[in-house]
Length: 194
Image (cartoon, rainbow, N blue to C red; front, side, top):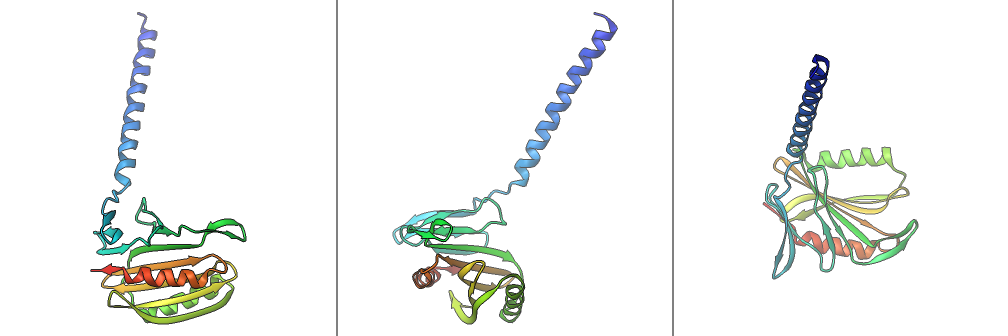
């Protein structure tokens, strides 16, 4: 073998090893950056399906017949979809959609109300907006009933507890506000925060 051929062969082998190493390193980095979400689970119980988040100390019952979608990252919510599909302005949509999320945030009801009022008026054209103090699992919470031209009707319940903020939202398709509100109220009765 000539010296030139040997150098080319060694270069090719080195490039293969470097490429393989970079690939393995990147795949390990990707796997380690995808945090396991196995602390959020759906459990079948005699009372129905329960979504439990052991890391954040919360559980809630999936409404009968509803579909549930677990998050794939901490930035996503647990989503619940009603079984009823209705005709909306932009085609078919779920009659009701609910979400549940938890963030690390130490706050209180007064601060939340001020932030929500400011952000809502800045981002949306508001038809109506009402606040109410409610209780979820024995903890004081802020309920915000909002109707905007951009997003339609929704209810948000924020539960500040210790260093966390538990947020529950229901979105209703047009003309189904009352039905979705009732479903949401029943859902909130099943929430347990520890």
